[in-house]
Image (cartoon, rainbow, N blue to C red; front, side):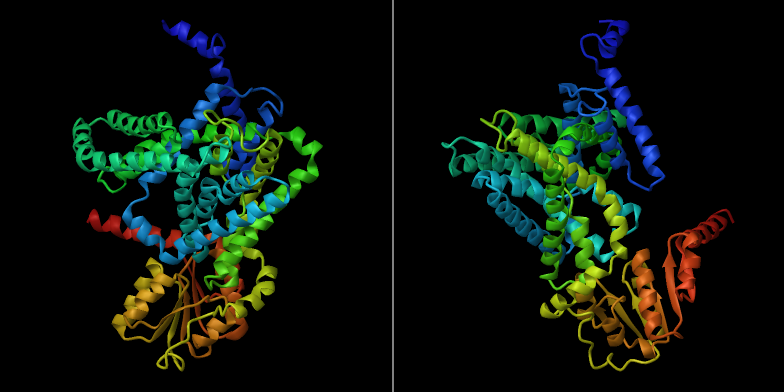
Length: 561
């Protein structure tokens, strides 16, 4: 086959793929550029582009097996890269309480959604399946939104990250359970046991290969010195294992996830991640576009109450359950609310479950087509609204006031009880936030013999430093109670080291209500934030981009003499 023949096939002969890809790409670019002015993320533009040009919109592009294949590859590569990041160090850094919060969120949301579905007349299997589908949140949308807003290192950002990690792990047993849930009356737990046995055997085989064969193979491939060959090897591992699991009766996404875990703790994990990411982003973009193509405008117009009702149950129901699950672990109301709103949407893995629940070789779809379409329609709307919700969430205060009685009932404290040494502190530096910058400040104060008290919302960090005898307490600097316990009235200075801008503004307001004279030093990401922080009472604002620029200048001049 010559070049002209191949191009003719792509352009509209046997496989009209090229025109469809061009239409989708152009529409996605236009949508993203338009939404950029409203500061909405790229993914929202892709969802809208798919909805507009898809079969339920302008009908410029029809759903096809080729586009579905692009989406499947995108999901497989997403699971592969998630597996690559599941190394021991990242799991350890997540923190036990974050993982526990994730487990509580999954169990409570799944159970509550299943109960609501059963009250709406669905069978036990259908209710269980709906609970599994709505439990999962959108890893791609939430993490990208938190990263863009520099909130991933904030307390609620760390909690959300830990929960998303637990959800990414939970998709594996859920995908294994789908065939049994969807089976005929003859299906039993023995079928689930057989599938679990297959998965266990596959994982054991993958572990042996990763231990004894993969290191030698990757060394040989790396020795070639070709990026193309290395990328080809990584893609072969991911898609090859996805193909193996498919023929074993399991989900292809499970195989891709196992392939990522095989490389996660090896010296080649970072290289593989950097090489695969651009390819993954390309295919995953088409995954979101094809998800947008599934949005049924006609269904929304004909059944607005049903779609909006399911949307309300998703956003409000999931948000409330996630909030309460975190408050059960005695987190403050503000963190609990941000956590709940961050995980209130439908997720891409929920769509994956819906698709798995109606695809061959299953005997029948678990949900009737109308039920799946209504859930998916509402889910897509929730995914589009998520960036807007995350942008507004830090400014919401009414919910915190409503949860104050529950805080007292759960014995949530603004700060751990201070020791006798610290409860009458005077002339000390009050440090809020113990990230890398805060820890460096503590070290400098300690070496100079200065007195200090630190407030931190990462319980693991607090526990470790308290064991080392440090005056560090679990507390929210925006809480008047925490400021009282930290002896704000007697402090020589306050330093806010985190760069969660809404939280910094709230902390400044709380500090100035209690002490109008104490010097307050804060961080800001950009120079444009300085004026607003100074108006709220900041004595000095340290701008990250300016500080980085000064260090770059000094180091550059140092190295060139």
